[in-house]
Length: 112
Length: 114
Image 1 (tube, rainbow over the protein chains, first blue to last red):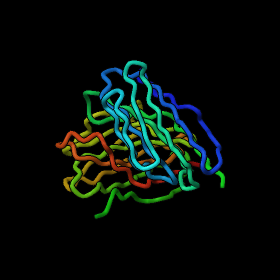
Image 2: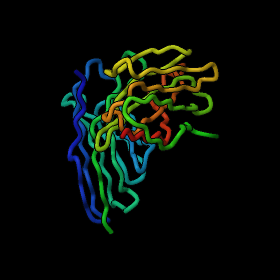
Image 3: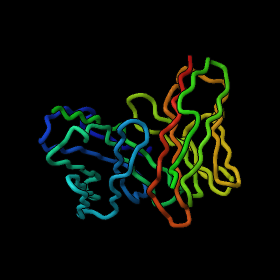
Image 4: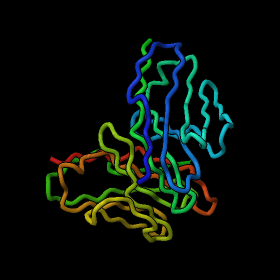
């Protein structure tokens, strides 16, 4: 059975700190790993990672995939209160109809 | 350009009732997927519709059914509601022809079953 595990489940830090969120997976016919940010309801897309070792970067956020060890990390530097959200990791198969398998999410809280 | 729109945003039902949730995909998208997100959990795949047919289904009972219309909009129906069906139901759309893996999600319909 396909499995995606995120850690930690919850994290509270102070504004300005750097955080690292983890995602490990066990998926047959892995194709890509995606990160989403969920603030209230609709998850919004952050990154899609397909190749191992290539960092994707967007402002203060960055992410990298390790296909040998089957995990990904999401880094956020100089955190701001607006980064408070649930961060979801999901994987997608090589074949099939674009079905995403999600982890349980990491709830990140940034205190001022 | 409207994104994915879902209705209703909130609804309350009692056990045994039936519910219909609606979704309009983002302009240019032809594929609709439905996900169930229980409190404190990640979304779980229910099923996906393309060309008005169910293409793939997750591990959900037959009480969960759906439909896609010629304009690509979709409905999710749940019969014989259970307390455990209380969740946020997310609709996501994509364009299958581009082989896109990036789904655009709607804001969801929050279902409470009493």
